[in-house]
Every structure is written in C-alpha cells, then in structure tokens.
Image 1 (cartoon, rainbow, N blue to C red):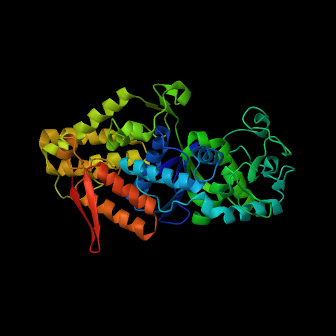
Image 2 (cartoon, rainbow, N blue to C red):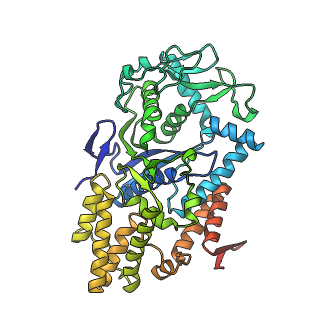
Image 3 (spheres, one colour):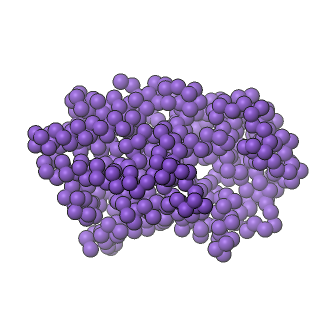
Length: 457
C-alpha cells in the first residue's frame, strides 16, 4: 500500500509521490524562542517527528527543515523586559528548547536555520516581489504584500478575499493600501534595540514573520518541495501568506502537500494563561516521563483535536507500562522486522493511511497480548521493532518500570555522538542541552583529550 496523505490544499487524501524519487523534502514551522516551550509545541513537534521517522522507515532519504524564529515582536519585548540582548535571550531559550525536545525523544531535523541568519535571502525575495508589482513601500516605511494581486489567495485556508473583511481576522495598520495586505519588512522604531535592526534598501528594519519561513524553506529545500507542516492554527494567515509570497516571487508551485495537526485543548478548553491551564513542557516533565508524553500524544490521530489532561496522561502511562511489562517478561530475539508478517503488515497499512497512529498502536497491544500468551521472543522482537518506528519502547524495560534512567548503553552512545557532532558544528547550546539531558537521567559525562566517557551517578 502506498503512503496516502491528507492535503490541506486539496482537502482530500492523496497518494504521496515525491518530486525527486527516493528523496523527501519537508519544512515545518518551528518555535519562536522567547519563552519555554509549552504542550501545544510538544503536540506539533511529536507529530512531525513521527512523520519524519515513518518516511525514513519507508526507505526515503528525508531532508527535514524546522526553523527557529529568533526575531519577532515578542522576542524584542521580552529581551527589553529582562535587560538582555536579543541574542542572549534566544540562545538561552534555544538551549532550553533543545533540552525539552530531547526529553520527548524528538530527533534533530536535518537543518535548523535561524531567521536572523537568512535576512539577505528575505530581502532578495522582497525585492523580487516588489519588481513583480506584488509588494509596495508604504508611507510609514514598511514594505507590504499586495494580497489582491495574488489571484489564488485564500485557496489553502478555504477563505475568499471577500470573507476576509477588515477588523475580523486582519489588523488594519497605517500605510496599507488594503487592510488585507501584510508586512514583509518592518521599518525600525526608535524604541527598538540596535540588534533588532538590519540595513536594507528600504531603510533600517527587520523582516516580517511570514517572509522568514518563505526565505528559509526556499534556501534549504528549493523553490518547490514536497511537504510543509505545522499546527492547524498556522493555516491562516501564516501558511496562506507563505504560499502567496513564495509562489508570487518564484512563479511556480511552492509545496505539493500541506499537513496540519489538530488543535490542542486542556481539559476540553483552549489552553490559555488567563484560564490558568497553561503548561510548559517542563511543567509536565516534572510529573511524567518524556516517553509517556510521547505515547500519549501519538495515540491520537494527528489531525484530530487533542485533549490534554492529567487523567489522560495517567491512562497513557499505565498503557505504556503494559507494553514495557510484556517486553520485560520475554527478551526479544534478534530477528529482523518482516513487513510480510501479518501484524507488521497491519501496522504498515495503518501508518500509510495518513499516519493512522491509533490503529498502529492497537497493533502494538495485540502483539503485547501475544507475547504474554505465547512467551515468544520473535513476537517480542516484532513489538519492539514496530514501536521503534514511533520512537517508543527502546528503553531497558526493567529500568523503565522501576523508574530509572531508562537509557541503555547504545542510547547513551548515540546521545554522546550527537553532542560531539554539535560541538564540531560549534552549536554549543545544543551540546550543553544534551549534557543536561543525560545528567537529568543520571548519566554524567567526562570530557578528556581521549574523548568522552560516562558514568551513572
């Protein structure tokens, strides 16, 4: 069975065919790094980590880009409040983000570009849009996109221009020719710090949010790529505007398949600080281990609304323990994964059906029941190998069940290798976050001229 995806643009399930045979290029909008990540971030991160893993399971080479937004109104405001530079704030929050992701088992993307490193590409795209008559300079110094000059605007989100009236979904700002137009380049304000300003042909300023993703995705994946993902809340205006900018500038299709995960609620209400139901990933990890959170979020279909609650987390923890108990009772054999095996075929069919993880997870429980009944090492191996495609059940069962670090020697070696790679790339924030991740699980690293060794505290 071929992989089928639900494409937001066509509103239909489609058979996936990559532009380049054997190679998938995927972009997912990442985090705006002004504060700690919250559980809504965990939802989309785990969804697209699952997609990334499954595409590779199918044998594709995947170039996965997930950006970091490190210049934004909220970032400027927070840096001013704390009396630190924008770079200090974003470096601190990026390191915290990486540490949180590691606890959830989120694999690093192929590229993780920072918006501030791609301002020249953004300015070049804005210049192209201006040359084509799709962008104009406003009286207040901003550069705006002329929405009505892009004929298919609204096609992705299913909104017509007539529906997008002033005051409903789009803020009216001075200098716009039309209330629907959006900013590509923001003129600098005197009150903004120096590190929030770049020189340009339009005067000092900084990029708008939407142009950042268009420029970064095109720079790293090309003008036309396979998959663009993100939360449902990004469909409009962010992804709609990305599509308008990119296709307007390049004159060709931007993305073939748009994937969006469903909204997250907390106890059946929208998460909000004002409601007192706002939780960071770190809040949750104080009470639940990262794999429980991962399993909890993946057992719901990615496009379905997701309800976050302690009761559901407790249920997920108990369910995950049942799976680990089966593996603890019977040591898996070394038999390789055979996709012709009936349970494996059922698992694959579910995942190829628009990543139907609820059905795939049910196969894992069927296998756990078989392990408990038959005491078959081969069934245990199949359970572990299928779960691995979702990033589950790879810890030492006894250690997990006893509440230990859950890290075996192979996993520790993998994290040390990832840390060494980060240091070689001079990404010291990531290297530090991996050290902190391991330390939090009782693994102490010792660096020397001969390399890195470790011991359990």
